[in-house]
Amino acid sequence: MTTLTSISDTISATLAAGWSLPNMKDIIELAYMISAGLFIFSLHWMSDPKTARRGVFAGVAAMAMAVLFTWAKPDVTRHLWIIIPLALSVWPGIWLANVPLTAVPQRTALSHAFGGLAAGLVGTAKFLYWFHNEPEMLTSFRVAAIVLEVLLGYLTLTGSVIAAAKLQEVKWIPQRPWVYPGQNIVNLIAFGVAVVGGAVLIVQPTAAYAPYIFFGIVFLALNFGWMLVMPIGGADMPTVIAILNAYAGLAAVAMGFVLDNKLLIVAGALDGSSGLILSIIMCKAMNRSFSNVLFGAFGQVQAKAAGGEQKSYKPETPEDAAAMMGQAGLVVVVPGYGMAVAQAQHKVRELYDQLKKKGVDVKFAIHPVAGRMPGHMNVLLAEAEIPYTDLLEMDDINQDMPVCDVCLVLGANDVVNPAARYDKNSPIYGMPIIDADKARMVYAVKRSKNPGFAGIDNELYFLDKTRMLFGDAKAVVGELVKNLAPSASMH
Amino acid sequence: MLLPVVGQVIGALGAQAAEQAVQGAGQVADGVGGAHAVQPLDFVSMLFAFMLATFIGIGVIRRVSRLLHTPLMSLTNAISAIAVVGSIMIAGGEHYPTWVRVMGACALFASMTNIISGFMITDRMLKMFHAAPEGQAK
Image 1 (cartoon, rainbow over the protein chains, first blue to last red):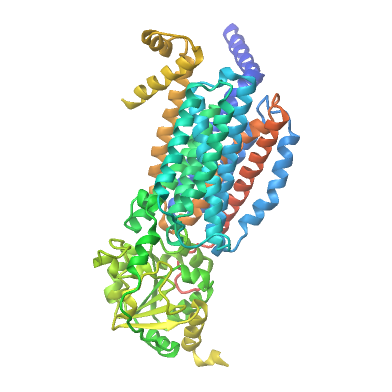
Image 2 (image 1 turned 60 degrees about the vertical axis):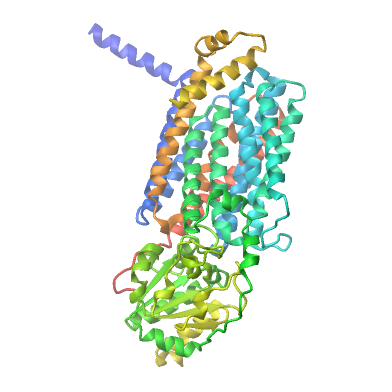
């Protein structure tokens, strides 16, 4: 009896203690831990299209927990200051979620910019607040983390804005790489100044001149962003977006160090590793190193490579091309940015349907850097309701290319250029490509007779088995569909 | 091996800056284990969390289907908007002056926009991925 009473006493005492204010901190920490775990599951479920949507729900749950339990913190009391920005963010959030899928690269870049801005602002606010009110909080570790957070945050902000503008093809940003002599030296000096400034701040965070140094670093970081992205051309955008993704994640990690919050660290690290892996995949797919993408100034090499002897294209009518495809056993479509620009994916779906009706097997060969961001082509083709089981990765489809009867190159260029295999002078030498030239017959859809974005002639277009279909990708595929359709539907 | 070394270096720096007094090397080393015991422990465990989360992240992300790299990016966009935690603490914090809170509110707006648009567009894209149904087209 006495034991029971004492146990129940203990329990009630524990419960009382559990719900009193001091232990709220533990509950919040626990919620953060569960939230971090859910984020990991969220990414884990992305491994398969079948479970991927579950991943989104896990992510939403994790984020909701993080928001609500942070809001429940005892010292978070100014609720109006939270409710108003929250309410204001609903409309732009929904608007950004419903952009056309061809604009997803820009949207992604813009959202990296927002992430960078948030990290930068929190870092700035924290530093200045501590400097003026609690200078003892500015330990070396915290200051180092703040410097990192602010550098990465503001760099991501301006870099992503420029990247988004380039992807949106606005007039005031040149599409071609923007380079000037000594560019790398200027960048290096600016970076060196920022590092020195950061070091001074770490050693003397409470000196009277510290805010000036701090704003100097902010200024430099804002400039790094555009300085890093301006020299990078459109073809390198997938890598740049992936790198900016990693930066945005690392900025969140740094914020976690500043605020002593492990949830921020874990979620930021997940994001950072995602950006890292994607950039590695993109770099490998172009046979280039990180430094080459960031400092390589792709444009300069191209100028030399362009302008060989004039070769002649062999044009073909859509009627003949359609007839050829209708008799094929296997047709492989290689989509590229041209398909996205022309919004041709729905016409491609019609082509897919018509060919399937005739018993032709149709596969899509997706190069990792096709389009303007990782996985861009897959999303566009999925939007057109083409089953993802027919979207094949480069390595898988290359085994089948020798038995492919017709290869239709649709707005892709560099990713099918055989020069990548043997021409050491070509800027794309060593880049793994889709073996379009191994197919029995190649049809290339091309908007004009000018060389592509990279400015390199594509030898694939001049092979004996290649025929050109000139015109807008959507219009050409539409013609193909019309010629393939059974006469019944022609009326 | 590396972590304790890094920790010691940063810990020594911290002790130096905090005390701002002339101290011998021995006393600084003392500071790591003694007077500043809480602080170094704190950041070492944070670095630990960072390291482990990075390894988990790399392991998990490598297995993500290449088909889904675009949705993956928008999902990680939303996840990195976890900066919302810091923004809420600053925007709604009890004792912050108004100018700090304004910055926090802007940060909160930016990260909340990312959360809403990131999760919504990821789901919108994922809904479009269908496996090939044998026989039926739609």
